[in-house]
Length: 133
Image 1: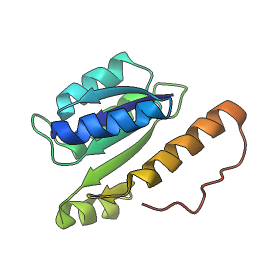
Image 2: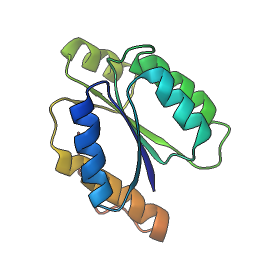
Image 3: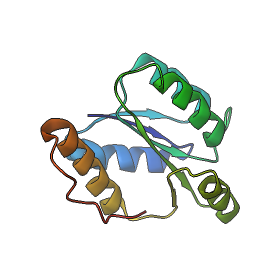
Image 4: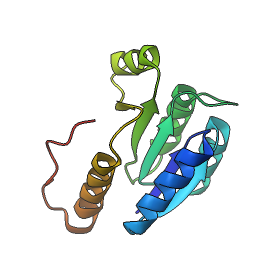
């Protein structure tokens, strides 16, 4: 399973990348929305974890572009937005987007990814249905 982590803070990118790689995921990283769109367009991505506050192109704009690209693909891509700003959190929630507030528990993100991996490999029902962000 291929994951794209998008955050302008190197520490967050590196930490999440290391953790997800430990769990057997193929991880790509981007430091801004423009780079995220480029990487997404060139790769078969299963899951995007993207900050809303990004340089060059913000996360909400990148989300819209990635969703357009994804509509032309057979594989579904799940996008989880992240933010530490309450106004941006509410804005994303009002738009019906999947968003978590920073800081968050990495174990919940791992559980979600392992569940997605399990579903792709086995087509079994979710064992983490009650995991909420």
